[in-house]
Length: 305
Image (cartoon, rainbow, N blue to C red; front, side, top):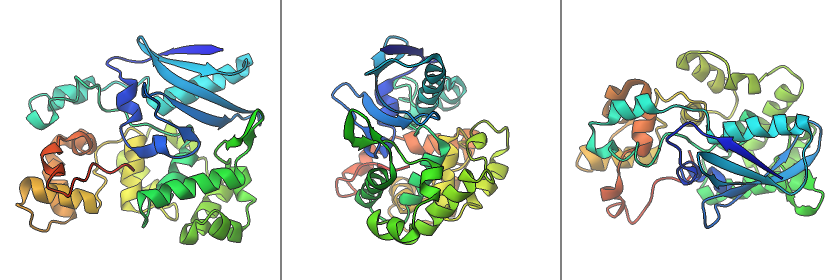
């Protein structure tokens, strides 16, 4: 079966899918030649499904192998809408940056949306998996988590959904540490899962909570394993762009762009984008750094948020 979901224009599926590296992390598979992707999802009923998201006029087409009940359709459609930010409006962003040559491309490319996993829980766990490791390490840990604890697709057991909080809450810490190879992150992931599974922490409620950025940042930083960079990245995934995800790559880019390759710190990165106000995170993320890629040993923008 197929579901057609409309998007607020301008919209480009390819732009969202390639906005950062989430599409490379299980249970995503993709992108394909047309910049679509597959995703495995465990529904609240416990049923595990797989769907393909492809481009369609005015939005996306969600293709599923089997039929869905009305209740399941009512769960999948909002999930995909959230993952792709189909209902988000970036016209004010385009107006704000339209005079800046280094951001002149954003409206034409429909940039602004960042690909998200289906639940905030999955996004937080994956953000924790980006800390103090290579991108290859992040991909490996995400895959190990899915393969060790995720429920398999009935018709394709090699593919599994991202484990629910309840499933991870029941995990053994040593299995998380050694089999899933999360290392020092294991107790952080376990505690997060236990707090969400017990109802102590309504993480999914944060997605729609009307909170100022500072308050939401405080909540994110209260989660063990979430530091300033992960918090800033998660804020951007949640539609709060008034902070920059500052890491060593940001230092390097800002140093080349404005400081003649001299060492810079957080203050210089923040200052570089301070004038963009509530859009500073997006201004940084979609800034045209292309001139500096060749200078930085052929590197490209980071694949993780």
